[in-house]
Image (cartoon, rainbow, N blue to C red; front, side, top):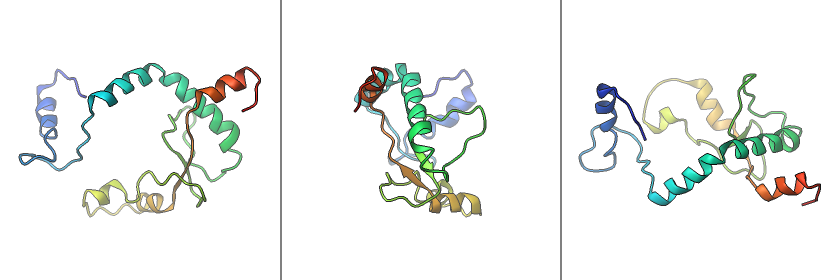
Amino acid sequence: MLVSGNEELLEYTRKFRNYGKFDHQVDGLNFRMNEFTAAVALVQAERMQEIVDWKNDYAREHLDPVHPARLALPDGMTSGLYKYIVFEEIEKSTGKVYDQPCHRIMGRSDELPNTDWVAENHWCVPLYYRPESRAAALAGEEE
């Protein structure tokens, strides 16, 4: 969703909304959100800080010690941990963020060797949000 008072920006972005239909004006990806997904997103957005805190606490305590070759963020930056990225092949991966970098998917010929390397050499460790685990931990119970 985009809200803006800048008419030039709005006109530019309108060109993307019909991607995938016969009259689309620019290349892009068709990421339309249905009503059910939007409703879930509204509820999850209200809980975002709780979810991010839980995932980061879990990652620092349980995953960081096991995966020293993980993606390191700059000091002061907090990740939402959509993916926990490591630069080592792992047995139980949830896949990769991208098998091909975005510039390759879009057919660009740019030479971005670091981006190509990351796409080829990263894996994602499973990290799921489980509020019952946090409640049990806070209550001093075992899972």
